[in-house]
Amino acid sequence: MRKFLNGPWVLLMPTLIILTCVVLLPLLLSLWTSFTPFKLTKPDTLYRFVGFRNYERLIGDIDFWIAFGRTVLFLAIALNLELVFGLGIALLINKITYGQRTLRTLMMFPMMFSPILVGFQWKYIFNDNIGLMNNFLREFGVIQPIPWLVDGILANVSIMAAEIWSSTSVFAILLLAGLLGIPKDPIEAAKVDGCNSWQVFKNITLPFLMPFVFIAMTIRSLDVARAYDIVQMMTGGGPAKRTELLWTLISRTGYVDAKMGMANAMSYISIFLSIAFTFFFFYKLVEARQRLSYE
Image 1: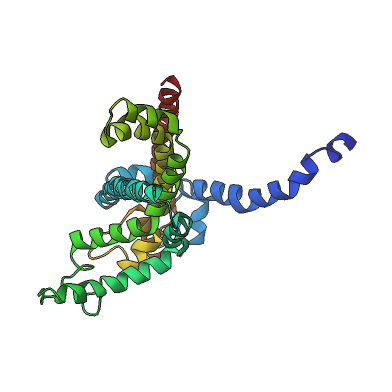
Image 2: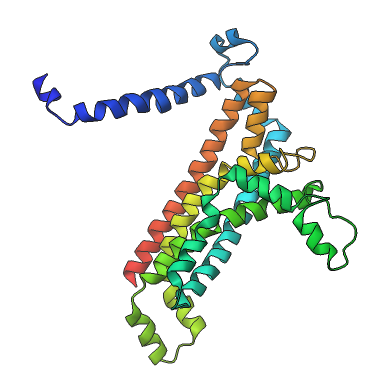
């Protein structure tokens, strides 16, 4: 007992107790409720075990799979565009010799805003009547207002624009760190051998940046897969559920329809989606590092 009290466990106990109460117990409770027909309006249903019935119902739930597919599509498009824009910004800033620190600071501003605030400001930008986008287009002769947040396709594009604007800087910062860490000798040797800028980028810069790309992809895939705030602020999942992603569907099922058991079952399926993307990008990260070490 004295050995235990003198060990590091005593210092760790407060943290472990807090994590157990704040993380582990709610996680176990949510896992239990995913196997029950628990409704917020019927507390006694918390104690009725129904096995995998919620998960079986989700297999045939068309709304769930549409939201699931929309989330995967949203994730793929947003991540790739953020990568392209972030890489372009990082390459431009890396070429600048004067004022680079100031630009690096300004580049971080979008990610400092909370997602709720980003959703509000982009909802105003894409507003049909008083939005900045329609007012800007009116100056070029587009008289008929464009229903950015009413049309299903345009609403999804608008949400992606807000998400990309707020998070491209994550890619830019990580890729710029990679660019600043590239050794100069291979680049200078390639230029001496007659390689042009594209060949240097393709054969030296890009392979060196790939570990940083997959680190950024891993971080952002977890964030985008949990996208809720921006979607909720801009469209609320509408019009007619055409912008509903997994987490907005989970929120509506749990808090509006009061079907908390079903909502938790959806949550665990979405967690598996996040884990799958994380493992994929981690595998690619290890592969890129091995390839870089061999070269």
